[in-house]
Length: 187
Ligand SMILES: [Fe+2]
Ligand SMILES: [Fe+2]
Image (cartoon, rainbow, N blue to C red):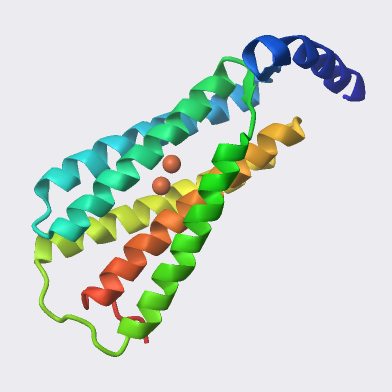
């Protein structure tokens, strides 16, 4: 296993200067799991786009459109992995995640500030679509978690772990929206 990894490193060293990506040989099982995640991401993009055009609330429309573009980024990464390329976690990417981390804590702050003054009027179809996407995010996050255990390459594990964390954050954004609009009130 070490030898395979070292070979990849050597190939990666050559590629790095040309494509900024390492090359990796996937096992059949790894490929199958990535194909599954690819189809999950495609469904997420389609559903967020479709639902964004259907929802009544403009804030929710914006949230779904934003999440559709995040899922497109995931799909691009999965396609790169399927091509045997390991995308580099660029500094702009990690910067973005740092920024979004800040956004999360800001939205968390908003969440606790507004927790005493929830709005109680909402559109029922909007609530149904939110519930559906929350379920979907939960499922996709779980599927990434299961997939991660099967990968030899630690870099791919790290990338999949990063995506899984973002899926949890998508769920958190939907949860916060639902809570703030009185759609979901866990006791
Ligand atoms: Fe995704
Ligand atoms: Fe997601």
